Image (cartoon, rainbow, N blue to C red; front, side):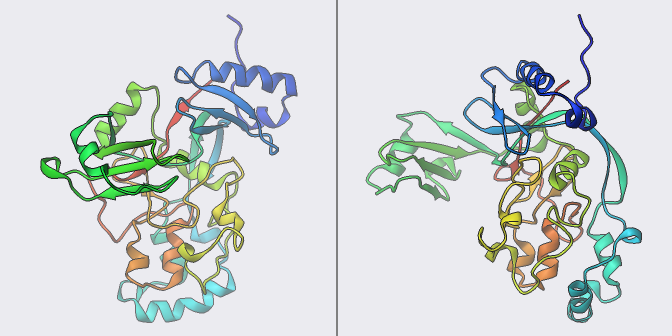
Length: 317
């Protein structure tokens, strides 16, 4: 068998059109059954589709720096200006300089070996089990309700199941699917994904993918509009926040409510469940939840993962 060239970022950027075409064909054959190559995006990113229609992109392998170091960071003037007021008003940070705070809520600077991966473009909520047509819970709860097109409806509990139900409609609201939320642990999720040919990203891989090739504090740069909260930002106001990054991945857009799971069970990335926003903390502290290297240092990490978000990945060669 002929030896294949490793799919690295350096190779990808210098390869010919024919070489990339052969590469994506080889990659598609390594993905779960029913996956397919779709096209090359205008940016040159290779787009695939997992079974069920979820979009995914090829992330070539790379050896890269991830994490944050205060020693090499120059904070934007706007951050410097607001920090004294934050330090004086939030007891937890009263003895920290701005750089000490940024380093405290970030993972440390390090070298990461990122293999070639096909990564789901958008995260998915975990811990839902589809209920087949005719299930009593689905029929009883949905019966008689006026459903709108392309809607999502939830119920906190139903009868003896004591699990949240979710109804999802398409363009025709008479055609719907009902899911039941089930208790799921991190290890159970890992096993379930593995059985289907997927895995979670590691924290190193997620940070690299989040940055999309940039080494800035946030995936779009170092600055944020400190007069606003990210959850209030609309697409037209800040497309770099609400849209995809340089790799074609959509990372939490404008919501701090939905942290993502990674392979390490005690790590959550890309969100804090809305804790800081709901606590009405200063906007910089809320924006930092969306920084590429954010690590939760204040609020406890929930052990159960049903209701949490994750994106599937497949390592390829």
